[in-house]
Image (cartoon, rainbow, N blue to C red):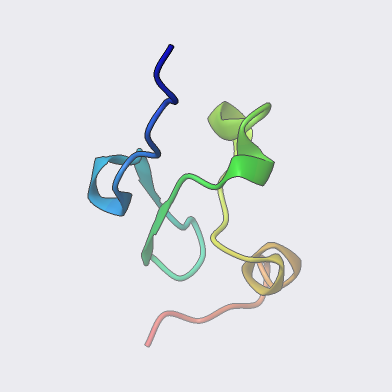
Length: 54
C-alpha cells in the first residue's frame, strides 16, 4: 500500500474571510466544520462587528 501524499497548498479548498476579505485555505483543524468556517483568524472572528474595510 502506498502512503497518501499530502495535497499541495494550491490544491486545498479556499474561502474568503467575511471580515477582512482575504482568501484563506483549508486547515486540518477545520476538517470537521469547514462548511461553517467564515473567518480567517480568531482576531477576525472576535472583531467581526467593529472591523472597518480600508
